Amino acid sequence: HFIRVGGFALLILGPLGPASAQELLRIPTTAPNNGQAFVEGMLSVPADTPADQPRPAVILLHAGGGWEVPVTSQYAKALNQAGFAVLELRLFKTEAERAPSRMGYLQNLYDALRFLGTRPDIQPEKVSVAGFSFGGILTLTSATAWAYERFGGGTGTKFAAHAPFYPVCYGYAAFAKAGRPAGELPADLLRRW
Image (tube, rainbow, N blue to C red; front, side):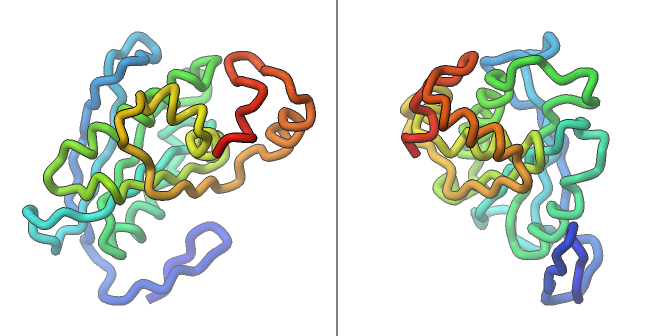
């Protein structure tokens, strides 16, 4: 079967149907956004995988319109079909609810990474992150040594891979050329991966 995902077609081997079991999680965070001491996420795991068999996972980050805009669900289904557990973080519901700084969202992302690392059904060394537009910016920034040092807390827990989809790259290019801090971001952010 082929599934169209954005401009791509994914080949899925096997039948399409109920591919996952879902669970709404409230993950404690050290960076509350909108007054919440947790970040929500929808965890889906392949239905045909034994619960005691750890699996790789992908954290999906939605675009700037918020989690109500259904950007990540089609990718979650395809990744579940491929054997991955998927955590679709719900950083903010609508664009109007988005916090002005992305730093709290980076902390939420690393808190989710640490949380998944404690679950017996997840392989902690095989947790990746993929994000779209605003989520792509967070994904790209989370790949820097600065983000790991600041938000990863030196725990040794790192992302296995980063896949940013259509982040605003011109902003990163201008930032790199300027060579000076921008808000909370250090000047050498893009020199340390």
